[in-house]
Image (cartoon, rainbow, N blue to C red; front, side):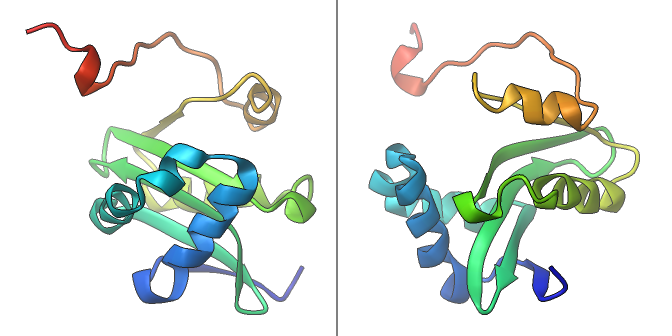
Length: 135
């Protein structure tokens, strides 16, 4: 695994490869909303990829105020690279950059065991979209 690199996101080099990972994973909303997804990456102050042989094998995108809250919006690894400790390593690299911030994220029914194994604890939250607002 020595040939895997952790690098900052660069749109021209990484965005299409990230979208290909999203497509393979079935994250169709990110793929279908291509321009919004590209804007989200450009506005995120946490935007990192893991590269092997010039190929994006995983990524994490998030937002932080750098002191109190660090929120991981998406994290994804290509299936052949899961279970190798890379996701935990990526989260730890990000956490070290913001040591006073608490790291938060949402998990799916299938990913919660990974996060619990990384010493995350569950918390209760809410979500809505603009279309769900009551004016």
